[in-house]
Length: 481
Image (cartoon, rainbow, N blue to C red; front, side, top):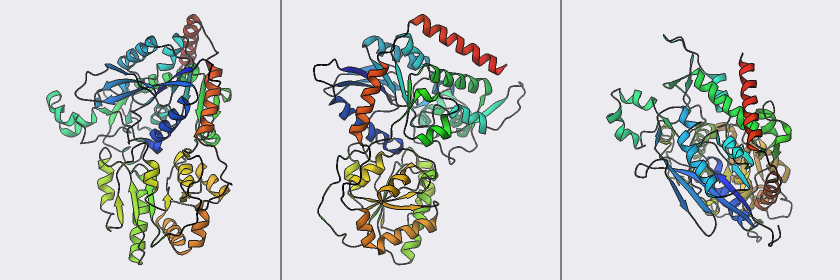
């Protein structure tokens, strides 16, 4: 964009403050790099996000102007009383309406619906503001997931109910201190009558005891999810594979754009040759959950230590809000060479990568984010990744590490042993060359600006929007009938 052009005003909708170190797949680190790059490209970014608070007035709005971007901050209670509030909150919708009234935006970019409302796209369309949505997590489709995988149950009132249990019940949240004043049931029942904003899609938390939810509430959520698809102008996914696997049957192809996450580094650093003194250091950076393979990694290193290996393992991950699972795996941390580093604040990713030589990514799910992988390779780190996801394609193409066919103790042990013993191969993976020609943050910026400019030209009258919603709801009712 030329400097004399009018800047595009874009509102980012985020699930948490961008400085928070608790984000899936280093999403906040990616957003921080992206916002910085966009603002340098004559796009005026504002951000809207919630903060969980016991002291501030809930659902009040704090507008904080800044040199980089304006923040729209609202305050949420640590727990939701009902499941419906997790996807359709009139109070959050009122805050969103006020923000749109406060400033004229050319585009709304929703990065996550978590802690917000699925009615946002319709509200934006009422005000003639186009909407783009990034599908970076499973929140939009989680209602369908519950319905498909739920356990039906018969009750005296004759209504079918389904289990909802992907919201963590953490004993460290402040509601525990006050719940006794509101409920007379046991602690277990009190915990299960609330819903946290921090939804973790993991088998560890997706087990009984769980709350039962009426089927009609699930149906309402699914209807709103379909309306999101109807009213959004564009959807952004990180990979074609993700679209084909999860969304092709529900989101039209003409609404989908695939933008692979770029890395934070501009070029591979430190061109001079080097040698690693002592044992190779390994690092794990992810949520401490079973799907990330942390238990297999710990068991693999314990086995290696018995064989005389001296390699350090640096573990970066959030432990407080995820205390339940952390307590389960803590007993496997038996050696001083396994070092717990805690969560990584956005902006500190490069510094954390500098503490080890090889990044182990042992995810068991088909993840499509590539920000951490590319940033690690640009920091001259070799990587170990599972063979069945988007990351493995990059590793194989550019020969930057090892891929493992399964996330198992044996496979991880063999990979660690190979990189410790075969230093020549390790240094080749960590080489500096010009062949790592992948998309970076600046490439994401260019593509997003093109999309913002394109959708901002689309206009609809309020009557068109209202009619569209009316017809869509009739279509849903007919399909149910």
